[in-house]
Image (tube, rainbow over all chains, first blue to last red; front, top):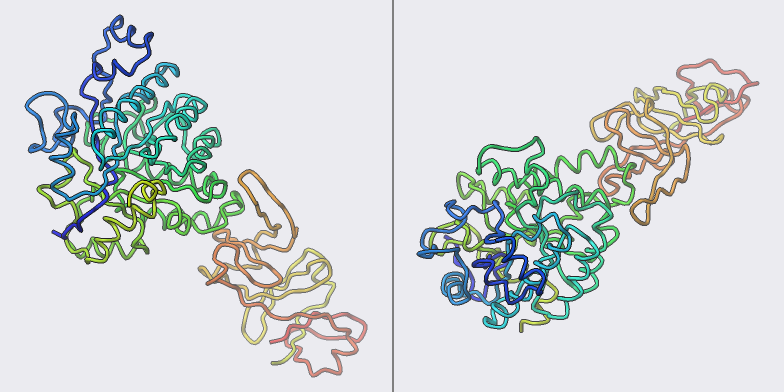
Length: 356
Length: 137
């Protein structure tokens, strides 16, 4: 295993909302009463079923309840062992799945306020992403503007599978707000399940759902490039979280090939897609898909044509590696440092404002 | 460098093109508003015959959704994969740093001048009354 430099910046960890009860103090009266009246006891997505071996590594699993549900546990399991200087908390909760815009906005506010009080205020090593009600772009922007005053929010969190491709212009007010506030756009694996999670319909098994996330990421990356998001917002940083990255070189070969023939259809894309990715898009490290040997992985890094694309992540508490082997074998100390420290710093503008 | 008479001017009207061979090389001749341009008839990507390409204009955009259309008739797209090239310069719009089509200077000369030469009239008979397309190679 490659040694992880001290002071690594972990760009993807997942504190859990332990239960809807934990959000009650942060919900407005109407919604607090609705939780009781409707008998809402869970708002977790099926993206990470509680007993799936991926959802929580065995040695991080609590005796009961959801993993990573309190700050002391997260510090002990996710921060201390990796000598992490900063970790970015991406809370995966069922906010984006709701069909009611008002309910989505109310729960997004509650999750973000809960994140501030229960996590950021208690653990100085934590930063967080703003959860937004993607059901309604204006409400999402309102929530970004409300939370952005707290510089410990460094990113806006979107799910990779929503209702429409993320390049479409009706999403752009979100990107404008992110660019204005110096927030990255983090696109995380997961779905609102308003559409099938694969492009060909509903799968039967969890493996199909999880593996298929990579295709959703490819589609979103293609959408954002072709629709001109990076032409309109040249300073925007988009981070693909828990996306995997082994598919990137082949996908860029394909996208570049067809862009060359059809450039005139989208003349605002005035750079090759690979150039756009290298200036504006980053990828969290975990999960590292399973290349058969170290040599194959290093060859893949060559194909990526940049050592600035990957950002260290453990994806805690998801089970992506064992022990402390968060970095794959065979990385040079220079590359390990770039992934663990330099690349995250260059990506998250707000990290540099709040971290020495 | 020598000058080769390849066609009469009438054979390639405005907006037209003609494939000729000069010293064994296939050259596509284009007439843009009365001015003639020559380009190797081989796309640098995979060798597509440029002379059969779609002639179009240049599309640019300062922002998404914009189609600034200019230089109508001055861009040719390879018939095989659609890569765009500037007929006047051979410049590619998808890979300008690494990809370019070889271009050749083309002029129109009066028949009287051509007869007196130093020209190599490889393919066509020349008469003093006509105007001729001359490729320099």
